[in-house]
Amino acid sequence: MSTSESTLEVRDLRVWYGSEQGSVRAVDGVSFDLRPGEILGLVGESGCGKSTLGRGLLGLLPPGAARDGELRFRGEDLLSLPRKRQNALRGGDLGMIFQEPLTRLNPLMRISEHFTEALRTHQPGIRKAEIERRSLEMLRTMGIPPTRFRAYPHEFSGGMRQRLLIALTLVLEPAFVVADEPTTALDVLVEAQIIRILHDLRQAVDTSMLLITHNLGIIAEACDRVAVMYAGRIVEIGDAREVFRDPQHSYTRELLRSTISLSTTGLEFIDGAPPSLIDPPPGCRFHPRCPDAMAICADRLPPQRQHPAAAEHLFSCWAAEQRDGTVHLDPSEAAPLEREELAVADEA
Image 1 (spheres, rainbow, N blue to C red):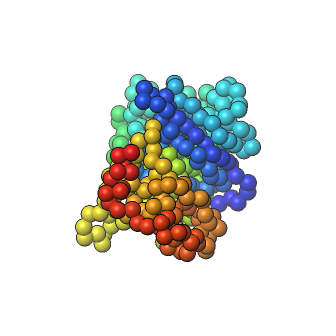
Image 2: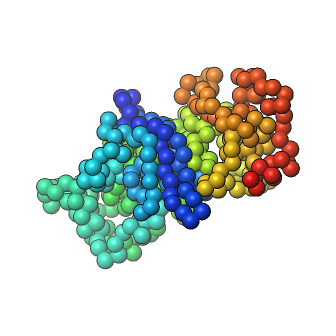
Image 3: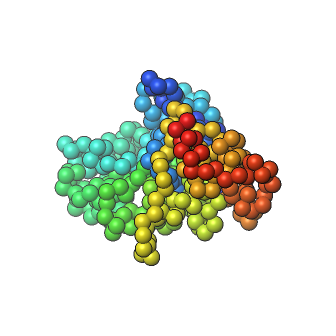
């Protein structure tokens, strides 16, 4: 993996939607960098803002949505660029792999026509022979034989259609790709194939990737770093193996505890559900559901800290700091929140 300057720099990014009840703060102050060739996994429960963050990075937001903060791609501030320049970057330099291939593949167009349309849209001067060469090479990389080049989307299995969608994105050689649940509804063997393909391709073309998923196993297998998102904020980020080995935030710990493995003897889960993003709870947003919650958690937002043994492992959790002795809280601040208090906080 390349270690040169960042492909993407995100600082205090916010994305919100208008609604009759008020503004839905789906992404609320997210910051991270992404280096060339790096895969950052984004994990969290449904409703935590993962897909909104991915679409917000590319400007693929519905009418009525807004974003602000700082978002730099190879030094260009995407939020201040003219719309024409943004559109020119999107698809070519900035790619998106969606969840459902059939919603993105035209059933009336052959696969060859899909590749021709994509390449000619973003590279108008490209010749027919070059289109076919690059398309067939990308299909070969995806494990799809050239004999299927002129087939229609319905003639492929679900796993092959997902690989086609990945091929259509990567044939343009983007520098940054958002992969939003690329293995949803696929069986475990096809899922493993796609993860291996993504892992191999990022090394071959140096593409940076934000991989959005609920599956912690995929993060561990395919990603260099992991970002844990809860209620619109990244609560922990760092090297994937380091975070899984020594999770700091209580939410990360609870996600890992809830993961099913071959050694699982009983089902574990996190009580409750993520809060409303119209009126999220004060302090740490996880405190109404947190088994480690203290009085300070319901009152003050925890600052971001470095893990003492890993500079790039960052987290925001009062309970972790209390465990490690990083901070010394007053007895009133460190007092555990009782379940009755948590229920009241959850209703507030």
